[in-house]
Image (cartoon, rainbow, N blue to C red; front, side):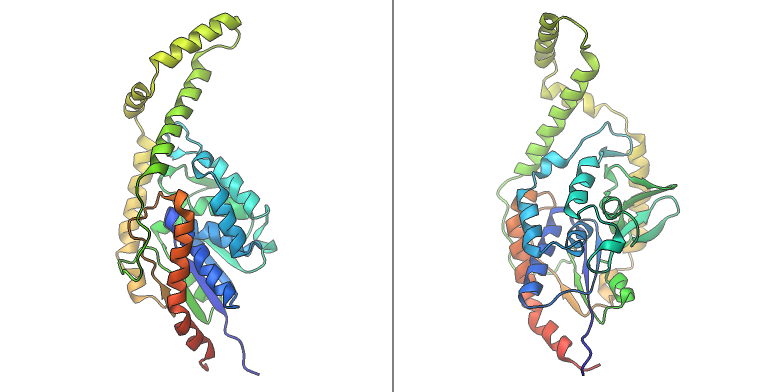
Length: 324
């Protein structure tokens, strides 16, 4: 009896663009193909973890569509990152059913980068949500994740598309979804505006105002005085002034994190990993004018992923039929 070839799926990072991984999974499922191994970096780790935890591609698509992305961004006083990341981690935890790696339906690895010893880390044991949170910790944007004595940031600074990881896991056929290729294989949806970024900026200002109110206004004053102070506060500390205050902040830790990350990026990505990659099927979606921040266009990203995977299905079928 002919032995079935094991399929490994490498899901790259790319923020909102990583939502196209859902479309790739949808097409594979419709074709009756179920990956045996998954490795993911950043947003690829998020989608990969949800799938490995037992969600169908359609369920993951629904999660992406119904998630209010701007409201899971919890801004913090910039120290080592602008976003605290607790709400994101909680969303991931719920989406993976609070599972440990050993309880996942299929083998899965999340790629992160250890800033403490400057090495790539492949999480495959322990808490899935914490590992995925580490994998998506974009330096300077998300606060790094501390696990034990080590500090972790986004795995993309060393391994943007972890094709080698799924090969080492045992895959005979490696499918890599490369979100960084300059190849234009399909037309993407053109974003009309930057609505998500505008809303995110407004939320940032609103969070800052709420935080400052809590610090400045004592709650032990009589109610009429509290109302008066809040009224004055709202009229004096308007958004433009808040932006000026924020612009004057010193953020030394962010500078350190960014510097370390950029250095790693240059040294690791200069080798042009994908150019000489040991990959059997390379999926290279083209996003048109869709940006990394366009989370409110999840449907379009999914469609882009579907089209990119469909284009490669004949090639995948040939590889699956080919004798070793």
